[in-house]
Image 1 (spheres, helix red, strand yellow):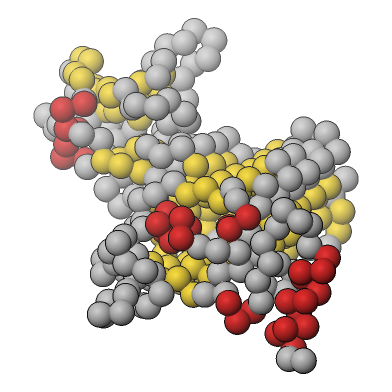
Image 2 (cartoon, helix red, strand yellow):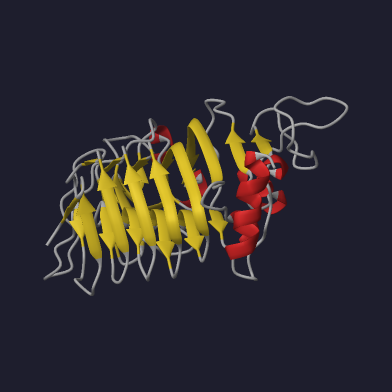
Amino acid sequence: MSHSFRIALILCTFAPAATYCVDEASARRLFVSNVAGDDTANAQYPESSDVGGPVRSIARALAVAKAGDTIVITNTGIPYRESLSLSSGNQSGFVALPFVIEGNGAVLDGSALVPDDDWEPVRGDLYRFRPAGGGNLRMFDRQGKPAPEKPVDRVNLRLPQLAAGEWCAHAGYAYFQCAAGKLPREYAMSYAALPVGITLYHVHDVRIVDLTIQGFQRDGVNVHDGTRDVSLAGLTLRGNGRCGLAVGGSSQVIVEGCLIGDNGQAQTIIDGPATVGLQNCNILENPAPALVRPRRGERVYIDGELKE
């Protein structure tokens, strides 16, 4: 009896009836390229040919994936502008055969350029626009970095005095101060348009590696409600409206070697009764706290030590 077959037999014997059972040989590598891919392709080859090729979107790869598969994202140098959700048995794995998303250093980006016609003049060189969808508003400069933000006076609810290139969020609008005589379109500003980078809901044995997730309204990665045995490794989670990583419910997550910073309200939010292990992570307290926890039974380990 082969080693692979023994693993498959153990998984079949002890897995709950609702889960899928596969052997190691049946797991596939599914390829994605937002330059060379086609969402009508079969995703089973890294380059297009008569027998198939990569798909164009990560979402399409997730739709055709089966339990234990690996999705290989091609780093084309162009961001993937998608919001992803893993929420089924087909997007889970097994102890010996996790469901994997290999980022290869690619960028998943939730931002979008502000349309020129959406800017409204307020007075002088001050303009504003109202993004669709609400959420936590973030603004980015032409290099994709968070633009300088000035807080609103929460007592008097007055707009602050903005310097050229600064912005503030007030009453659902983004207010932006141009330099004298300049127009907003000359700044090529973008904003957080999509809600969440990657949502994991009731999945298990998932590994996501080597991916930058940025520019989303709410969270870079949101793990909640019974998600277990998840590993996040080598991720960069930055410039998201609420936080880089949010974990809640009874979820279990290991976070290894990740860089988390420049998120709006917190870098990580962990709510009970979740269990999270942070190992060799660099969490920057800029501009918001590194860790927010409501102390509702969550367990947080930092480099192997339980944080009280």
